[in-house]
Image (cartoon, rainbow, N blue to C red; front, side, top):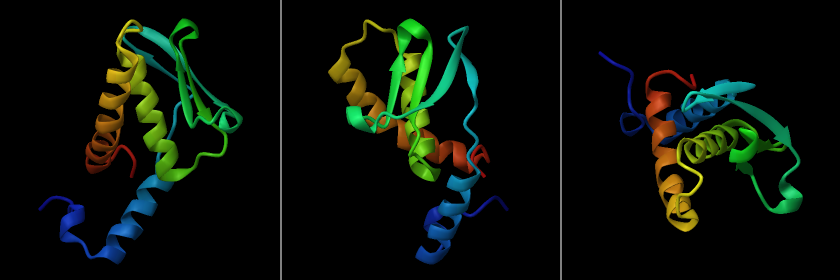
Length: 116
């Protein structure tokens, strides 16, 4: 028997599991993407209206200092996906793809224990 998925749990159990998984997510200080070492930086991005930012030219992923739990994990994965794509990618198309993929990827990673 494997881990129960969210559909097999009641709403209270889903909220508890989700909160536990979000609290335990570990955001690295750096990681290798496409063979290059990227640095993960916490910065005040709210004044710019951002939760996260991928800076290809500096190999940096910046995450707002106010992010916690689920929102932090989702934003981190969102920016990692941007880092995985080439800089010259169409910005609007890329953002649409990343917005759809990041939450699904987080769900898959939670299921295998990455965030819990």
